[in-house]
Length: 245
Image (cartoon, rainbow, N blue to C red):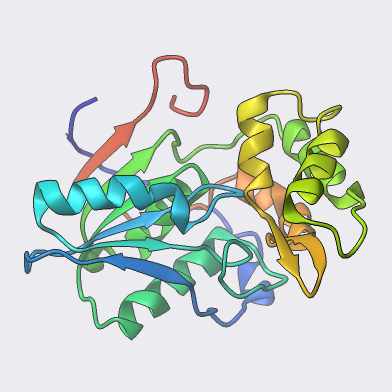
């Protein structure tokens, strides 16, 4: 992959009535990996069912390599961030805007993977002056056609039944056994299991499955804009990726 001066411009059409579903931005949980440089920090946005911890090892290495501060952020309805019934890219972009304002950051390098990449693109199109550079990993501003796999994941996770008061190791094994008939790929299964947490002696999913399920079509699509971002942009993907086209 190489850095592109990319004119990220999406043809305009009606914005699918988003104004009628407007929501207040929610506070986001984040981790800071401090560096000595005064250059704009790197801000990482994770993908669907992910969390800020996905980037912890990479963040530490980038601090050493670049000297820049690195921030990893939990999206709404993910990780330790607040839950909301609204799960659109416009809403998640507004969350990032609030996040940067709260930390008094007037510029950043925005790096997003999958869902986080689409959030990063939407944010950059809305507030280009706040983005020094944009990096989108394994995603492009297009419709993801097949959502049946995600629907199956969510259905299996919602159907999980684990009794109260059991050790974490037992709960994880039971969850794995219940999910495996639907989610047979080990890497995906173990990735989803990172969201299993103990809340008041009951193992539950920390992701907001209801909100994700209701907005799955929004998450698989991309909003339409008439604006452009002319800053340095890198689209990074594997040679067999179905998400970079």
